[in-house]
Image (cartoon, rainbow, N blue to C red):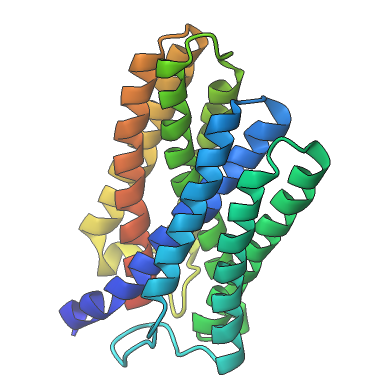
Length: 276
């Protein structure tokens, strides 16, 4: 039964990884755009990249109907439609953002609208799939944090490459994104502690995550939370000394670990109702 649940959870994990990459990378680009001034090329690429990922998410959303082995429930038709509309609107607005990036006022409006669409999609997914409204709140928190960490990690990797072809680009944008990643990873670790010791998912009670999936939970903590935190701190320090090639390599390793953690966390919640 557990193996069947994990297999059925894969389409949902794929949707979650795609939307978190799309929404989070766009979010980090918008933050950097308004507080650290990266290059126009980076901002346009990030917008188009986010739109492409949203398109892929729509393709995986054709038949996301939970099976009986999963801990989540089928979403009501109106929330299904709202989730699809949110992802589609995000994709369209992200493309528009690529064309208005040189216009400060327009980019603020379009960027804000794009992030609102992302929030609508995540909210519809959480309240549609969670067994109850009470369960939907921590699930939504999990989706938002996964979005910041996963999408932020790919945004930092993409930005770090711009330094390899634009040597005079100030280090401020990458330093800002590295600090944001550190902050979100610390928040993720705190949530991990709360959820594994007190509970949080549907039917999840104190320490039940360790009883049900001890190895996966320990790997989640050590390999996909603590390890990325160390890597991001090292990337921050190397970026501060303008060792951008070293920072890029560290951020690549961080991205791999974070994506593995996002896939694992998504699969555990969808298949077993565990928040980690």
